[in-house]
Amino acid sequence: SQTIHQWPATLVQPVGSPLSLECTVEGTSNPNLYWYRQAAGRGLQLLFYSVGIGQISSEVPQNLSASRPQDRQFILSSKKLLLSDSGFYLCAWTLRVRTGELFFGEGSRLTVL
Amino acid sequence: GENVEQHPSTLSVQEGDSAVIKCTYSDSASNYFPWYKQELGKRPQLIIDIRSNVGEKKDQRIAVTLNKTAKHFSLHITETQPEDSAVYFCAASKEGGSQGNLIFGKGTKLSVKP
Image 1 (cartoon, one colour):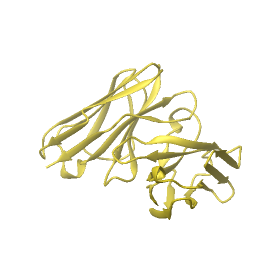
Image 2 (tube, one colour):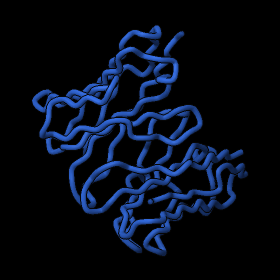
Image 3 (cartoon, helix red, strand yellow):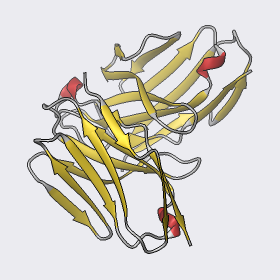
């Protein structure tokens, strides 16, 4: 069966510090991978998606970046965090072949102080 | 691009009553419409979905209806229970490859009062 792991679960970072959130998927190959942000406990905003190694598409301009160094690994980064980067970050995957259920990781709660 | 509007943002019902959440979408090419439930502090999970080749789908106490002409779809929960309390998200996407990215509504916080 497929599983998705995301870490760290929570982190508190000062403004201007770097960020690295990691996500890995097991039990499947060639998944589409996504990073979503959920601010104020509500809406899900798509930040990045990837259809393959090294292929990253950004949905919104921001000081975040994403990378996919391996087929089942997706990383969200920032060189300098802003207060507005606080939120709940969710990694997700789906099968590439056909749109279907999006499987979410357990999320990473980021607080920028 | 696709835009999904969801209403209401909050909904409070008595246990046993029905709850209805409505969404509209902008891209007539969208053909996949899932609903996700997110309990407090947890990840969103799929509860039901519908594709544009059907108008209604039901799974026990939950059902989804789709009106392609009007570009809206709705979630219906009957005989609500306290454990139905959560945030519900609708979403829309087009089938296939990089175009199959779900665009979510802003969510509806459902509270079921015992």
